[in-house]
Length: 588
Image 1 (cartoon, rainbow, N blue to C red):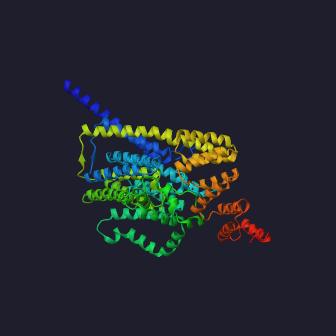
Image 2 (cartoon, rainbow, N blue to C red):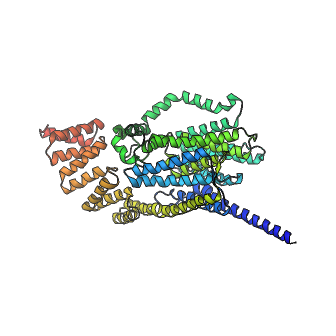
Image 3 (cartoon, helix red, strand yellow):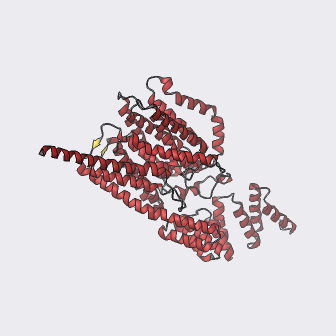
């Protein structure tokens, strides 16, 4: 009787432990795989930034779970070494970066990805766990198709941008297809997964993203390659079709590319890489130095903007910021994970079981994202990058011959992971998300013509995050429009001298302020800087010519600027009118 009671108590304890494990795991995956893709925080200007919080919550919950169940940390040796070197190098790159606050901002994202990778590496997913992600993807895809058939026909779904949405769904498409071929699964279940895959594919088509469509086809081709053994033609059929199609449309694609804005951004980026090819310019510091190397013809493109923060090619972006060392470590980590995971399962007798199909789907999803990011910025955005590193961690978990750390050591890793995730969760909420709320209020107030309200909100943003150069810039503009010229000048100089030299149109705006103050020499000085960065800015060229004529009596130089304007825009009304007046007055 005594032994029966003891056995019953042990059984109840085991049941409770299983219940705790399931609860923590289900809640963690619900936050990350379901809420993460769908959650938005509309009061914030960047209303998708809240998604980062779900990644931190995921890491907190699973780290606590690992501590409770005394989970021992496991990782393959080569991956451990490369991962450690990569993140140590990122810290080094942050320290050498001239603009440390920008490096710290990038390091925040990489810390999130590292925590997600470590946690994902040590969980084993079951089929029902992935249903959360499929459900979220299904809802997001339906919303995307509704966007497409709506009046604007602009797909943003729950990601705020068509490319960000496509970049996320790219990972779900091969997973859904892989699940539709799981052996011994019910026909109805296979049909549901297949329907999901079709829905995901059509939602990617709806974004009209060429990069995402190409990446989707490449991901499907990779899945075919992984699933088909033996028959060469069948195994490589996806790649062969993709290659032949690419060859057929190569000429059209090339002409599109060389006229695309990316071509000019890449040209300027390569000029930067040539200067510092090995260690780069510093993590997160691309936007600050790119204007000095930008191809000036960039501004002749319709899509050009005063500020370029993204390279639109992840590999060039990593190279320009962290050098060849950072790029090789990043690619080396991915290569070792994929090859090691594939080799670990390629010799198993299991055919189309859950584990092998999950792994194949993960690898195909990873490859899709890698192809997409030849042309996109999706790995710069956590809504894609978090889940990319999640898939990478899940794949690494399938590698055999991993080293295992005793729990006496592992628990410290889980404690550090949980505490780091908690601190970053609070930090992100207060320092990143909250200022976005006031920033949006400031933008709304400015658009409504209430400049005082706009300034008050921008002041709150800058009090919370003094390095938010966008808020400082908008505040300076609002001060200038309100007549507070000295205050506007002070803030513009703060931006130019400390936060972000020559940001957007800071030089031109300073020129305008000094012209209003009657200091024409300073006005010309800053307008010349604006001209150097963008020699095709007609407003700047016309203003310099007007100062030369009206205040400096420098007719020859004024005429040279007017002729520059007419070279860019032969029908420019101002330039033609002033030249006619100068001719009538006999000055030219």
